[in-house]
Length: 501
Image 1 (tube, rainbow, N blue to C red):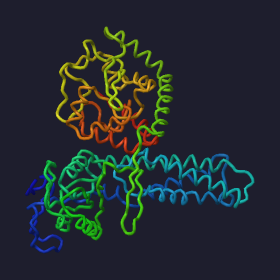
Image 2: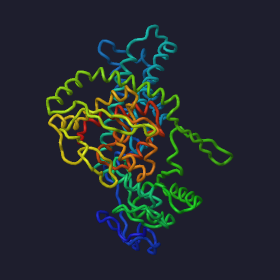
Image 3: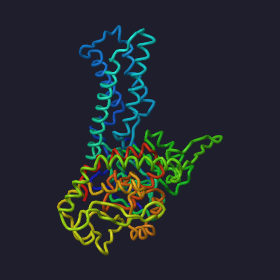
Image 4: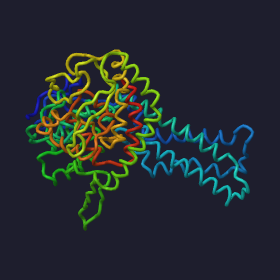
């Protein structure tokens, strides 16, 4: 890959050799034109570092006022002074839990446990103060009112802020101009991901790489602007606020100097670590003299943790079958009336350790077999959705749109063929093809297949990018916890609201 001479046509062009901000007219050998990004008014507001604490303060103040003036249970300041310690204690706990730090892609679910825990601990602390310090002989319901209202106001403010921020990012009003060091495969992958997902809040404006690695490809509109040595010029001319250090041919000591330079320029820095595919949240950090030592802790798919997961899966599947029993019976009747053929469609799929099993679905197509004979997915895409001629029945269209055709897979979970959460299983003929073409595709067979998965709740359903799906699936396996399973199940409830093919 070579440097390109012009940036995106939509960006404001800045002549390189014109004096900018007091810099000398002579400049290094950079592209002729560079984009200049000016932060929008919305970005200045949304990224204001004190906005979250102010919203939390406002919400907690409302909760405190409501608790003091609760109908028929009003409390005087002399009797309820311990309640005044509730807001600062909640905010202190949120600060300790990192809830005021900037995150790439914050979600509502990520804030549930920290907010609920901080509010609950603070409410209990207030009760202790009332009993042992204020000398209250009987504990009133005021702390309970304070806890309940604070959960609503604090959570509501956070949800509203996340909603505004997400809308602003999707519309291009809130994206930090970002330089990526390293224009190889990893750097290009990051650029494509950030371009396709503006909700991360990072807008790639160019690469820094003195010797771009081959095989990375190109990302339209994102040029190689120079080498890391030219960071000062490029950062000023592009208005960059963030630097992501991916893999490049630069030696490590040069990259260390680059990080120090970013800090001096006030640029935020993110780093893609070496062996990133083997790192997870279980990794430990210990100093070995002046050298940091990372200890890798991988999850064992056949250990006691996954045995507990599979027990949880079967219990959950049994409860879901009971809950959805009437609905499944109704669907079975409608499928029978819609067209001749079996109610349940069975298809061979590959699960853990390459084991082949029959996956169950409600039949959504007319005979013959809906798996179109000779169907081949597009280059880089997974199979799925409508393959070949559309044979869907009227009820089948509804079942696929709402994902209700997947309900019989709870019986697969009950039998032990599948889990509630895991990589989606694929047909044997496609598995043989993908294992030879897609790196680490076979690694997803370390665990049982799932009714839903980490890739699916991120929109990778049907004929979508296969490499992205493999990446998400292996991330799930490496980072598995029961909490992650619960998070995916909660996200699935939202994802099924989006129409599927």
